[in-house]
Image 1 (spheres, one colour):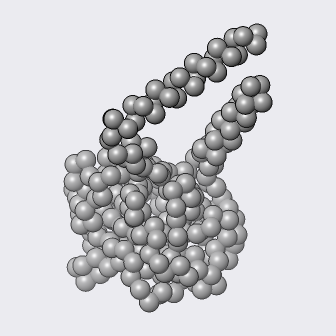
Image 2 (cartoon, rainbow, N blue to C red):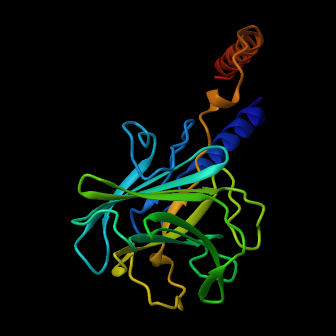
Length: 255
């Protein structure tokens, strides 16, 4: 019985270690949230639409302009939104880029994902690219969508990108619990506002892990995965409770 108890304790410790949060490359920059209701990608942040998202405020490296990043995922897609203070919101050549470190190793490599949302000729344009060496190039497919809009004195960027597009050589392939590094480039009417969490050169030629924040793909709450069958779950709960009582009695006798 002592061996059984020891085995249970080891299993609990291992589960706790596996479930421990992953530290961000850039200190304090780690986002993760699950949503059961995907947002509408239309450049407008409707009330409650991004309520489930994890958020962080940031200032781009070259200007003192405040941005708010929203991150969440459902079973199929990663959703990103950036809300930026703007005196001329949603004007031509407003855009954001997301540079991804697919395998979270702190190095930009061939095949790492690159997506952007831009306002061009009065309409939003979503770009889906990948790194070939140190330069992003189009991957020939468009997996996802984007929208750019004005909301008061803010420019709103909304993006959807599949967790599994099937384009494995060019897009990330993420499962629940996976961590992907990211860096944001932001522009106002084609004027470079800088990057975040850190500035990087036009041609990304460094392998500094602190250049990336972390996005951790969130799993759905357990009750979302288990059908509601009380007649089935109740006996299982009773059995677990009975086994717990037996274990407690045995431990009491041993002492």
